[in-house]
Image (cartoon, rainbow, N blue to C red; front, side, top):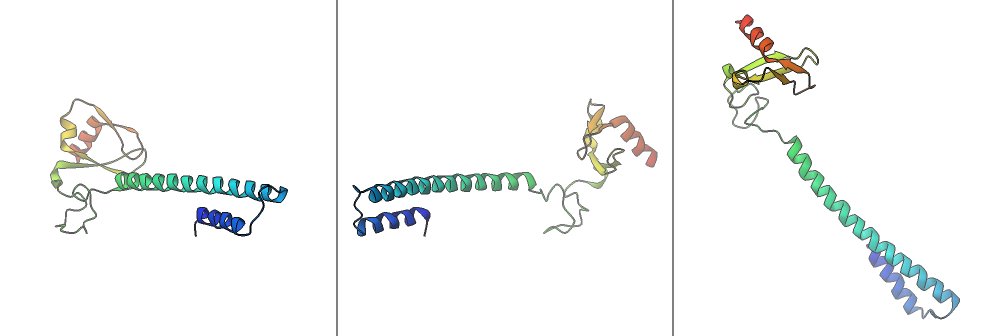
Length: 142
């Protein structure tokens, strides 16, 4: 039974008991029931708003935390042919680099080195990484 239904029951009970609304006690009961009715409506409105926020938050979480299996996967995805966690990327088109600040392994696409920018931010910690130094590290490994 909802709060509104409970307040409606109290209204019906007061009417069924023939409470005299002109008496002091009748006025008090009537005022209390009116306040309870207002509170019940407010609680229902608040519950509706919370439900709407919850749905919006759920959509936002799905959007933010959704993993694109074609771009990055764990190698165990459905239909995976052993992509080693990088979906449809070709293995020689990615460069692996360890960020000097956070020591996380960062992967860069080959097209990044063809651009005019000399630096890029580490996606993990935001440290500015010099692309020339990254390219030189890769060339030294060959």
